[in-house]
Image 1 (tube, helix red, strand yellow):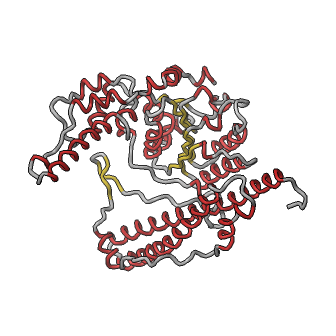
Image 2 (image 1 turned 135 degrees about the horizontal axis):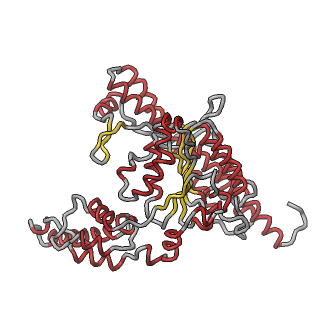
Length: 464
């Protein structure tokens, strides 16, 4: 620090140096979290391998895998303790007074600098024995039931590795996973969208000989657009499962950075991690955050994204890009032009028949009073999205919460009075609960009518 500085210059310098220190601590927190994610994936791989070995009768290999699981558990305990200390330092520095002197604002950073590279010893962890783990493993099935169907239990996808076999630390935060076993047939409604997706992506992957013989070029990517809460993310996961591919989900607002060059670096790392997997569905949620029309915002990554996307499409590997947005008309025309994205798929609000099925699912095995008419409810919820109906805070969730309140209040009153069988009787969701919830939930068609209408009328060819 220069010897002769005014008081305002000293404050500015202190704030600048504190921001650099905070950034260093945040980088350490991110690195610890990535390392923890990698260890959790390795542990899951070993656990799944042990389950398969035990099913094959190879007890020795199962025990060896479980020993590796125990080692991971012990290391995770130490890493969690280290991560908790780093996060506490991060919070303390973030809460420091912006005008504090350098000495005052660097107390937490001094402890961070003194932190040794190796993890501190955490509190003693009580780990189960190998025999106990074997007993637990024997009770786990090799398949899982989803939607009434038995499907093989999928192991997690390993993080991308570099050419020399080492895990790429920079790219490991863009890891892919196997999404929930949801298929297109499990997605309610959206028949037109399903047909487009099958023609553009699913069938070329599952039946390549047909498309090769007919010389039909497979698609490379899709734009999923529609109002909020209509299930675009769920739809993308179903597409990945139909093609039996890893699913890399990225929220585009997380790619942006206020530091020069960091946003471009994040985009390059994301695509590099996807290419390392050879087979991958890259899903970019809220893509308008970085791909709006050039000139509309300061951080616009259209040029960098186009370079990466063209290289992504030219790759010999099976790599596909799905993008989702609520504001498709704000996207740059270079993104939506033919040759980059195969189709634009409208994921709209559910019709009456679809809403009826959503109510069936939301109220499955839930005690309903005789005055609850789901057919009338489906007709009365025109303009509601799937989230408005079935998600937390939606109509069904609120109605069930009202019934739960009554049940708990009656039970507590009965306990105070000495108890009785009437206080323990099941409380049903009544028509009054549904009516009250219907009055409180504001559907997307009313809260954002312009967004709903513009999505409904959007045409990629016309707008692009």
